[in-house]
Image 1 (tube, rainbow, N blue to C red):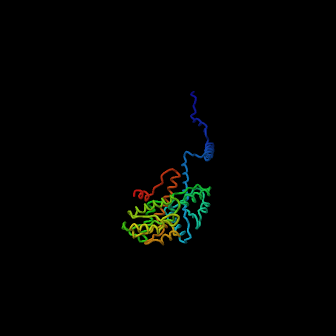
Image 2 (cartoon, one colour):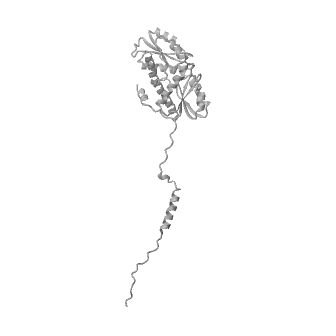
Image 3 (spheres, rainbow, N blue to C red):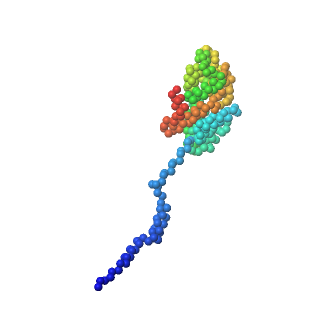
Length: 300
């Protein structure tokens, strides 16, 4: 007899990973992975932008009620040219806020930009002393406004507004450059350089510095010197930021036209920012960034 053979299928091997166990493993791995920070797959967060130092414009101060409004208008132009830059005002005397009060309110870094034209006592002594008295600040002092084509542009514009001819006769016309004055020899050299830059702007019209105090010649003396040289059309250019006693005194001695103080002229606002940028560049050991108008002026 032939033995009958059963053809029943062989039983399946046991499941090495039952569905319940697989689900449990998945849950545990998910829980563990949720605690892991995969730095290699994340974009690094950008470093916060370094805040620019506060620009502290330092004005002399004046009892003339127009002075404070004039300086504020100038700083409004500065802010419009550099949106986002913190711009503050401090006075050496006579007006508030005083420089010491402004510095006491600040933290971090500050650049003091004197709204003055030469290296006189205020720039070389008062401003460094103010920073020394504010040890909570990291501060530096910019150069005074000084000789620069932007300053010559502003001086020329104020002369034109006062009636100075577009094409003056150089043999007859001359300009007295009136400024506050200082006993410091470097300050006088600075004003001489400004006179030279303005003369170049005026195509060679003679420009003679004169002072309201502490130095000579005075405006009347300068007028007499120019008259003796044959100039009978003499204008007074006002090398003052804002109205005040000295500016009014100098204008009163003008034999002809007398320009207004520079005030909020756009070129002066650009020069304030240029001095600020220079001071920052000196600190970091690199040349200052040149804006388009500064590059153009450098080629003239």
